Amino acid sequence: DQQVKQNSPSLSVQEGRISILNCDYTNSMFDYFLWYKKYPAEGPTFLISISSIKDKNEDGRFTVFLNKSAKHLSLHIVPSQPGDSAVYFCAALEGADGLTFGKGTHLIIQP
Amino acid sequence: NAGVMQNPRHLVRRRGQEARLRCSPMKGHSHVYWYRQLPEEGLKFMVYLQKENIIDESGMPKERFSAEFPKEGPSILRIQQVVRGDSAAYFCASSPNLSGANVLTFGAGSRLTVL
Image (cartoon, rainbow over all chains, first blue to last red; front, top):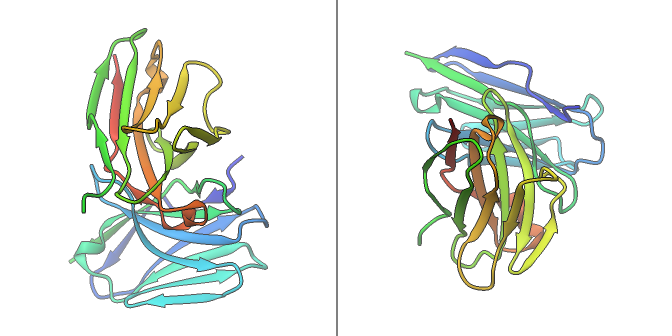
Protein backbone atom coordinates (compact mmCIF):
# COMPACT_ATOMS: atom_id res chain seq x y z
CA ASP A 1 0.00 0.00 0.00
CA GLN A 2 1.64 3.20 -1.19
CA GLN A 3 1.47 5.98 1.36
CA VAL A 4 2.97 8.62 -0.95
CA LYS A 5 1.70 8.75 -4.50
CA GLN A 6 2.91 10.65 -7.51
CA ASN A 7 0.39 9.79 -10.16
CA SER A 8 2.16 11.41 -13.10
CA PRO A 9 5.17 9.39 -14.22
CA SER A 10 6.22 12.20 -16.52
CA LEU A 11 5.47 15.84 -17.27
CA SER A 12 6.55 17.95 -20.22
CA VAL A 13 6.68 21.76 -19.85
CA GLN A 14 7.90 24.49 -22.12
CA GLU A 15 10.90 26.51 -20.98
CA GLY A 16 9.80 29.66 -19.16
CA ARG A 17 6.42 28.27 -18.16
CA ILE A 18 5.32 27.00 -14.76
CA SER A 19 5.92 23.35 -13.83
CA ILE A 20 3.51 21.88 -11.29
CA LEU A 21 4.32 18.51 -9.79
CA ASN A 22 1.72 16.84 -7.61
CA CYS A 23 1.89 14.44 -4.70
CA ASP A 24 -0.81 12.78 -2.59
CA TYR A 25 -0.40 10.95 0.69
CA THR A 26 -2.57 8.75 2.86
CA ASN A 27 -0.84 8.79 6.24
CA SER A 28 -2.17 11.67 8.34
CA MET A 29 0.71 11.21 10.80
CA PHE A 30 3.27 12.56 8.33
CA ASP A 31 4.57 15.80 9.77
CA TYR A 32 7.19 16.87 7.27
CA PHE A 33 7.29 16.78 3.49
CA LEU A 34 10.23 17.11 1.16
CA TRP A 35 10.98 17.27 -2.52
CA TYR A 36 14.12 15.70 -3.94
CA LYS A 37 15.52 16.11 -7.42
CA LYS A 38 17.46 13.34 -9.12
CA TYR A 39 19.60 13.38 -12.24
CA PRO A 40 20.52 10.10 -13.96
CA ALA A 41 23.40 8.23 -12.28
CA GLU A 42 23.33 10.56 -9.28
CA GLY A 43 21.77 10.37 -5.85
CA PRO A 44 18.70 12.44 -4.96
CA THR A 45 19.44 15.97 -3.82
CA PHE A 46 17.26 17.87 -1.42
CA LEU A 47 15.27 20.68 -3.02
CA ILE A 48 12.68 22.11 -0.64
CA SER A 49 10.61 21.04 2.34
CA ILE A 50 7.54 22.03 4.29
CA SER A 51 6.35 21.33 7.80
CA SER A 52 2.82 20.09 8.27
CA ILE A 53 1.98 23.21 10.26
CA LYS A 54 2.52 25.39 7.21
CA ASP A 55 0.72 25.60 3.89
CA LYS A 56 3.38 27.23 1.76
CA ASN A 57 7.14 27.46 1.57
CA GLU A 58 9.02 29.41 -1.07
CA ASP A 59 12.67 29.31 -2.10
CA GLY A 60 13.57 31.21 -5.22
CA ARG A 61 11.86 29.66 -8.22
CA PHE A 62 10.52 26.78 -6.11
CA THR A 63 7.36 26.87 -4.02
CA VAL A 64 5.78 23.96 -2.21
CA PHE A 65 2.10 24.08 -1.27
CA LEU A 66 0.50 21.80 1.31
CA ASN A 67 -3.22 21.11 1.59
CA LYS A 68 -3.58 18.97 4.69
CA SER A 69 -7.32 18.47 4.41
CA ALA A 70 -6.85 17.04 0.92
CA LYS A 71 -3.61 15.26 1.86
CA HIS A 72 -2.03 16.85 -1.17
CA LEU A 73 1.10 18.79 -1.87
CA SER A 74 2.51 20.32 -4.98
CA LEU A 75 5.81 21.74 -6.17
CA HIS A 76 5.73 24.78 -8.42
CA ILE A 77 8.75 25.76 -10.47
CA VAL A 78 8.56 29.11 -12.22
CA PRO A 79 9.99 29.93 -14.62
CA SER A 80 11.05 26.44 -15.70
CA GLN A 81 14.59 26.11 -17.02
CA PRO A 82 16.30 23.35 -19.05
CA GLY A 83 18.39 22.38 -16.02
CA ASP A 84 15.20 21.55 -14.17
CA SER A 85 14.78 18.43 -16.32
CA ALA A 86 15.12 15.60 -13.81
CA VAL A 87 13.09 13.13 -11.78
CA TYR A 88 11.38 14.73 -8.81
CA PHE A 89 10.55 12.65 -5.76
CA CYS A 90 8.04 13.64 -3.15
CA ALA A 91 8.89 12.29 0.30
CA ALA A 92 7.20 12.35 3.69
CA LEU A 93 8.45 11.90 7.22
CA GLU A 94 6.71 10.68 10.36
CA GLY A 95 8.67 11.47 13.49
CA ALA A 96 12.16 10.05 13.28
CA ASP A 97 11.26 7.26 10.85
CA GLY A 98 12.91 6.89 7.48
CA LEU A 99 11.53 8.88 4.58
CA THR A 100 8.67 7.43 2.53
CA PHE A 101 9.12 8.27 -1.13
CA GLY A 102 6.75 8.46 -4.07
CA LYS A 103 7.69 6.80 -7.36
CA GLY A 104 8.82 10.07 -8.87
CA THR A 105 7.79 12.29 -11.76
CA HIS A 106 10.12 12.78 -14.72
CA LEU A 107 10.01 16.47 -15.61
CA ILE A 108 11.08 17.37 -19.13
CA ILE A 109 11.62 21.02 -19.96
CA GLN A 110 11.32 21.66 -23.67
CA PRO A 111 13.11 24.60 -25.30
CA ASN B 1 34.30 18.25 2.44
CA ALA B 2 33.37 15.07 0.66
CA GLY B 3 29.72 14.11 0.51
CA VAL B 4 28.32 10.64 1.09
CA MET B 5 30.60 8.17 -0.66
CA GLN B 6 29.30 4.88 -1.92
CA ASN B 7 31.23 2.07 -3.54
CA PRO B 8 31.23 0.26 -5.75
CA ARG B 9 29.15 2.36 -8.11
CA HIS B 10 28.34 -0.71 -10.16
CA LEU B 11 28.43 -4.33 -9.07
CA VAL B 12 27.61 -7.40 -11.11
CA ARG B 13 26.97 -10.69 -9.37
CA ARG B 14 25.75 -14.12 -10.41
CA ARG B 15 22.83 -15.69 -8.62
CA GLY B 16 23.92 -17.19 -5.31
CA GLN B 17 26.92 -14.90 -4.81
CA GLU B 18 27.28 -12.28 -2.12
CA ALA B 19 27.10 -8.53 -2.65
CA ARG B 20 28.69 -6.00 -0.30
CA LEU B 21 27.91 -2.33 -0.66
CA ARG B 22 29.80 0.28 1.29
CA CYS B 23 28.83 3.74 2.43
CA SER B 24 30.92 6.41 4.10
CA PRO B 25 28.72 9.15 5.53
CA MET B 26 29.46 12.83 5.33
CA LYS B 27 32.01 14.09 7.78
CA GLY B 28 30.31 14.79 11.08
CA HIS B 29 27.28 12.65 10.27
CA SER B 30 26.68 9.72 12.59
CA HIS B 31 23.38 8.46 11.19
CA VAL B 32 23.17 6.31 8.08
CA TYR B 33 20.13 5.22 6.08
CA TRP B 34 19.93 2.68 3.26
CA TYR B 35 17.28 2.91 0.55
CA ARG B 36 16.61 0.68 -2.42
CA GLN B 37 15.19 1.78 -5.76
CA LEU B 38 13.79 -1.00 -7.91
CA PRO B 39 13.24 -0.32 -11.62
CA GLU B 40 10.26 2.01 -12.21
CA GLU B 41 9.84 2.47 -8.44
CA GLY B 42 10.54 5.14 -5.87
CA LEU B 43 13.10 4.78 -3.13
CA LYS B 44 12.11 2.36 -0.39
CA PHE B 45 13.52 2.68 3.12
CA MET B 46 15.49 -0.34 4.26
CA VAL B 47 17.42 0.37 7.42
CA TYR B 48 18.60 3.15 9.71
CA LEU B 49 21.80 2.82 11.70
CA GLN B 50 23.98 4.71 14.09
CA LYS B 51 27.52 3.66 14.95
CA GLU B 52 27.37 0.06 16.19
CA ASN B 53 23.56 0.20 16.43
CA ILE B 54 20.68 -0.73 14.20
CA ILE B 55 17.91 1.72 15.04
CA ASP B 56 15.21 0.69 12.55
CA GLU B 57 15.37 -2.22 10.13
CA SER B 58 11.67 -2.40 9.35
CA GLY B 59 12.33 -2.09 5.61
CA MET B 60 14.90 -4.85 5.38
CA PRO B 61 13.91 -8.19 3.85
CA LYS B 62 13.90 -10.79 6.60
CA GLU B 63 16.40 -13.10 4.93
CA ARG B 64 19.72 -12.66 3.18
CA PHE B 65 20.03 -8.94 3.91
CA SER B 66 22.05 -7.45 6.73
CA ALA B 67 23.56 -4.07 7.53
CA GLU B 68 26.16 -2.80 9.90
CA PHE B 69 27.82 0.46 10.82
CA PRO B 70 30.92 -0.37 12.85
CA LYS B 71 32.72 1.99 15.17
CA GLU B 72 35.44 2.40 12.56
CA GLY B 73 34.92 2.29 8.83
CA PRO B 74 31.98 2.55 6.48
CA SER B 75 28.49 1.19 6.79
CA ILE B 76 28.04 -2.04 4.88
CA LEU B 77 24.92 -3.47 3.31
CA ARG B 78 25.40 -7.17 2.71
CA ILE B 79 23.20 -9.32 0.51
CA GLN B 80 23.83 -13.05 0.63
CA GLN B 81 22.88 -15.51 -2.08
CA VAL B 82 21.67 -12.79 -4.43
CA VAL B 83 18.70 -13.39 -6.72
CA ARG B 84 17.66 -11.52 -9.87
CA GLY B 85 15.05 -9.58 -7.89
CA ASP B 86 17.84 -7.95 -5.87
CA SER B 87 18.93 -6.02 -8.96
CA ALA B 88 18.37 -2.40 -8.02
CA ALA B 89 20.06 0.86 -7.14
CA TYR B 90 20.99 1.03 -3.48
CA PHE B 91 21.30 4.51 -2.04
CA CYS B 92 22.89 5.46 1.22
CA ALA B 93 22.10 8.71 3.00
CA SER B 94 23.44 10.30 6.15
CA SER B 95 22.31 12.91 8.61
CA PRO B 96 24.01 14.66 11.50
CA ASN B 97 21.64 13.61 14.26
CA LEU B 98 18.36 11.95 15.13
CA SER B 99 16.27 14.96 14.26
CA GLY B 100 18.20 15.38 11.05
CA ALA B 101 16.23 12.79 9.13
CA ASN B 102 14.70 15.66 7.23
CA VAL B 103 18.09 16.83 5.93
CA LEU B 104 19.39 13.63 4.49
CA THR B 105 22.33 13.83 2.13
CA PHE B 106 22.36 11.02 -0.39
CA GLY B 107 25.24 9.27 -2.05
CA ALA B 108 25.31 8.60 -5.78
CA GLY B 109 24.14 5.04 -5.27
CA SER B 110 25.43 1.55 -6.01
CA ARG B 111 23.80 -0.25 -8.89
CA LEU B 112 23.62 -4.01 -8.38
CA THR B 113 22.97 -6.25 -11.36
CA VAL B 114 22.35 -9.93 -10.73
CA LEU B 115 22.86 -12.15 -13.75
